[in-house]
Figure 1: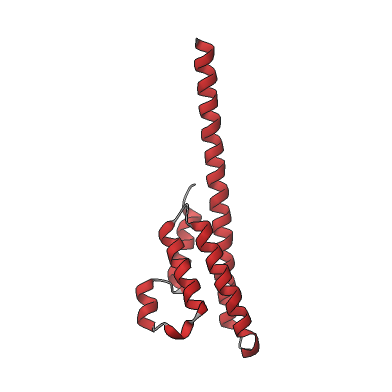
Figure 2: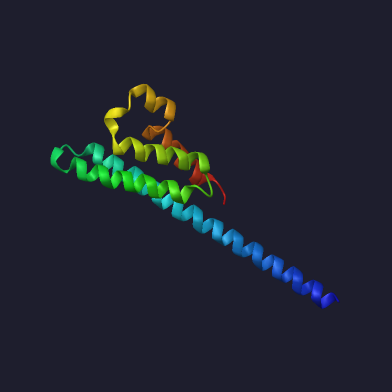
Length: 122
């Protein structure tokens, strides 16, 4: 009987360790996707050659969508912001300055959220 209890406890501990490892991996992947989206956006904003702009916008939409998908299981609110950011890059002209403020998708706000993720223990 004690052996069965010990085996069950060992199994539970192993499952808990696996879950923690999986969560850390999710955090890492989400941070990678989010930082990629942010960096691509900053590069885009610093590029003054208009010929490449639309092509880069397509990449930004993709990067922000990927970040949203990876963040969904761990930070749903931030994932929603990334989803909205992708919508913004798909058609920036439809967004007013007030819309951007309300959506909380300006880069300084997202950078602040990234900082929180880096400081969060997973």
